[in-house]
Length: 233
Image (cartoon, rainbow, N blue to C red):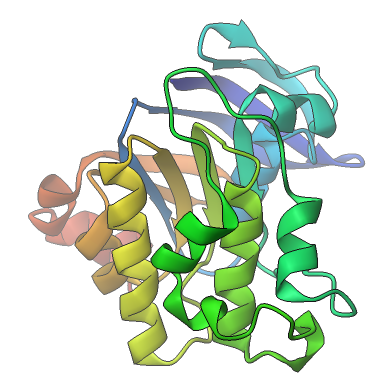
């Protein structure tokens, strides 16, 4: 579904990605793991046109997208959930969802508010609540729900478990497993190895803008040297 090869990413003149390559298959969950500042979030942003690429290619369902603006990438079927959520705090839950609405895509049932309320029962009870009056976990749910209103085939999640209570982290894990069951592909950036192990099929360990390990989650859990070198604090 997504193939990125040899990405060199830049913030101005500063190079932050060095030959980054990764892929995500249909209905697959892939995680980018690494310490804070390793380049995980930057990698996600590079895939949706928010980081300048000096080299490399990105193909989504066979279409090259690395030179497209972000809004066109979104319309092709890639949803991006940023780390800082960026909900519209003055809009209600229902109004936030409407902002994200895009047409249905062939071969998949469209996401509607009612389907999303089944996925996120907490949101169903606060349809008319402004986003600014919600907890951090509720805002995270709303951000994901708003992204799903765009009917994406691939969802990029940046640090979905960060700063959330354990019960909400479990809710996030359940949500990702449900998306996979629905046929939605997921690429997430994460520091929480336990959370990643609960949801991901494959992992890339990122360090200083480079992929240092690529393989199944089982292979990573069996590679103590890789975990000690690139993940342990």
